[in-house]
Image (cartoon, rainbow, N blue to C red; front, side, top):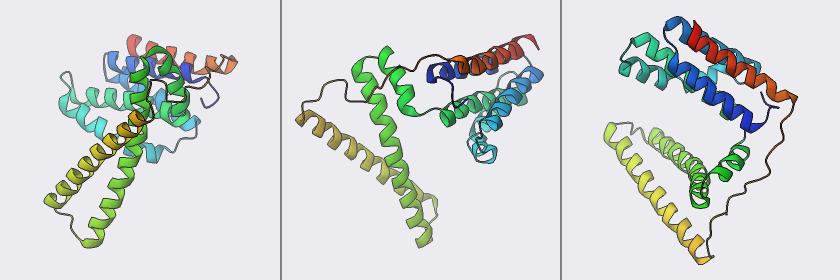
Length: 204
C-alpha cells in the first residue's frame, strides 16, 4: 500500500467506505472489516494504536444505527479503518496535490491551513492537559475552561495568520501542490482490494 499512487489509494478508500456503507448484513460488514484489517496489518500500521481511533466510530455506529446495532458498529469501524489505512500510508502533501487540482484555489488553501492548524491546536491541548494533570484539576469545569481557552486561542491564531497573508499580498495558491504521481503496476494491488471489498459488501 505504501508504494501505490496517492490517487489510487484515495480511490481504494472511497471503494472501501462505499463497501462498508452498502453492506447488507453483519456477515458482509464483517468481511469488509476483515479485508481492511488485513491490509492494515500488511501495511505495517500498529493495529493496537489504530484501534484507539476506532472506538468512537464503533460507539456512535452502535448507538445511531437504525438497522441493527452490531451491523452499524461494524459498518462504522470498517469505514473508519479504511480512512486510517489511507492516512497511515499516504502523506497529506501528496493527497493535497490531488485536491488542489479539483478544488478552487482558495478552498484548497483553506484545507491546507486547516490541516496545519489542527496539529498546532493538538499540541496546545496536550500542554493544557499536562498542566491540569500536574495541578490535579481534572474536574469538568476545569476541562471545559481549558477547551474554551484553546478555542479562543485557535481563533486568534487564525486571525493573525490571515492578517499576515493579507499584508504579504495573499492570492490563492500558497499551498505546495507538488507533482501528480504516475501510475505503476503497484497500483493494481489497492484497486483489486477495493473491488474485493465492494463485492464482499454487495454479494455476501
